Image 1 (spheres, helix red, strand yellow):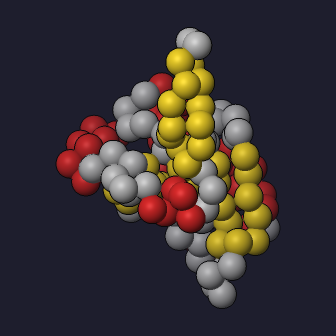
Image 2 (cartoon, rainbow, N blue to C red; image 1 turned 90 degrees about the horizontal axis):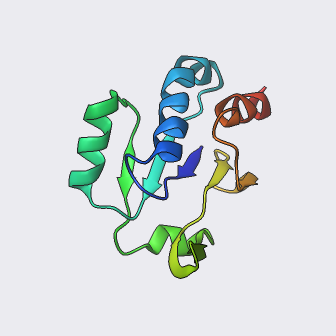
Length: 120
């Protein structure tokens, strides 16, 4: 299971990442791996993981190759400004490496529980 982190250490991304960390023991029976991906570098990932005690992998994709492959590198807009970035998306990837489910524009508060429910 992989989820896109638009930007480390921002309110929504922090809440989503910490929620997955809290739910991590509940994912173990399904043998699902949890990982987060963003375009920020490894140094940013390490700082973010250390600050919030994140124990699952946070992958750096600074050239946004993974983000483009999965279609989450898109034009966004904020306060009238348009820019490219990761849109908040989660993928459930099966043992055969095929996408089994995709969640777009997720609500961070209940998303970890929603993903866990899909594994049951």
